[in-house]
Image 1: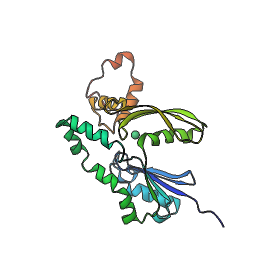
Image 2: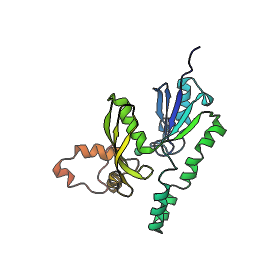
Image 3: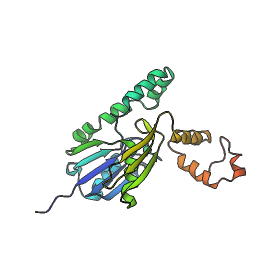
Length: 226
Ligand SMILES: [Fe+2]
């Protein structure tokens, strides 16, 4: 009897919405929603990216064994609540910024089952561990030290880990919100006139072209590249 391959769908559903399909650990398809919507850094559920992955793999939702989401909404809730309470009323602005995001995330397993016929196991994955895995597994190293630096994860902003053979990371150190190199990078991006969570790559690209003398002339609203 031939063994049935294991299919895993990975996806996110905030900025840069995207999806990937793995068959027995090999990437069959990976695509961003913006390729279909023509909206740069598309925000929302990646309906068409998932459809494209399934079509490329020649399968449909009920054939999936696992669905993995890039964020674990159960993590970081307690420190987040403490942060909101300590910083009232300013912290209420967070809820205007991303209204209903927690409820939307928590409703994803149901959405996949009810509206798409998904029958496999759903996994909420820790954000930084995803970054570590996406660097470690394609690297070819049998073991590694790995650093994930982000704006935020569920609460941690930077994680240093040792990844032994087998790939289960051991967290050695972490920094938590609001202490964040990534947020500083977002702030510099915004200061220069680009959108945060959007123009960071442009800030990076321009930064690599700066000399000592041109760096001192960087001002908000500096000319943007074509
Ligand atoms: Fe991230």
